[in-house]
Each structure stands twice: as structure tokens, then as C-alpha cells.
Length: 213
Image: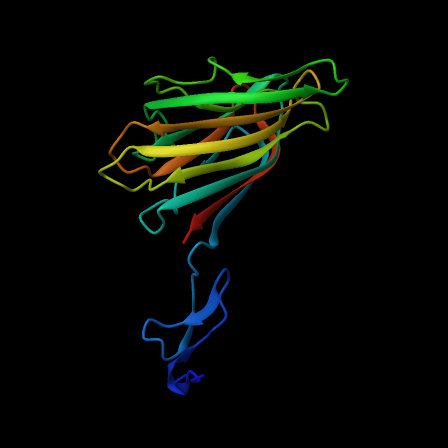
């Protein structure tokens, strides 16, 4: 078996956050860079009685997919929806959207379980915020967690598809698993994403934005 030789003069492996060591494009040296399929952390925001969490920078043509992780988002108000919207101008979060929504739930006392489509949070050519989780409770131990995928937001050709999966503590002591998917019906580039509850502040929680290489 032949051994591959690395040109000593083609080694560029200065350590960098979220980077890996890989062969360069000429296959004759090593360098640091993104590895296909890896997540690159772009931004982290932590709420503290915040009206919303908005990402208005770092969303561009660098990545074809962006992933948002919302972690232990606790509402200041009981029985509220956790939701998101997009902007094309950095100011107005009102992109027209069409979506589908279904969920499953189980009560703590095992008194109720269900799986089904939910027509209340879905959208049909609406600029309203997209609900990602509904009826979130604000007991001290209640919160919502999940992941939102946004695909090729900088495209000026295609609509902007998104999908999410959320797990929440329902106000009536249910655990609820929510699946939502849809698209922003615009060929303008998406430049920002905003998360908020339907009423009251985000009392606490963290949201991270990643780019997918």
C-alpha cells in the first residue's frame, strides 16, 4: 500500500474554534477548516425577562442550512405559545408563511394521551408568528426545548422552508411533542429570525444558532 506524503510547507493548522484538521484542496497538506456536515456555532443568546430573542446578523449565504436550538425557555406568563417569525429587512418580522402542525401528548397522571393534526397553529398564507409549541406552562419547573431548521435563507430563487420539533411542559401538566413544518413564501433573502412567547417575556432560556457546513 502506498503511503501518502504531506508537504511540510503546506501545513496550516492554527487552532480555531469549531474547526477541524483536514487535507487542503490540493491533497498535499493539512489545514484547519469546516468539515462537511458539521455544526458551526454562530451565536448564543440568553434571555433574562426578555421580550424576545432576535438573530439579525450572521444569517447569510455562508450556509445553506441554519439550526436554532432553544433550550429551557421559560415563560413569564402561564399558558402561552412559543413562536417565531422571519424578516427580510431586519426590522419587520412578518414573512408570509404556510405550514402544517401535529403533536402528541401524555398527562402526568396517565389520564389522557393523543396524537393528531392540529389546525389552530398551522398557517395558510399568513404573516402571523409561527407557533412552535402551545399552552406552555410557567410553573417553576416548566419550559420548552427544541430545534428549528431553516433552509437556504439567502436564496433569491426559492421559498424558505423550515421545520421544527419541540418538547414542552403543558400548563395542565402534560408532556407534549410538537412537529411543525412550512415555508416562508418569499424569494427575498431572509436576514433575521425572532423568537418570543405570545404574551409576556421570556423569563429565562438560551437559544443557539448554528450553520451547517
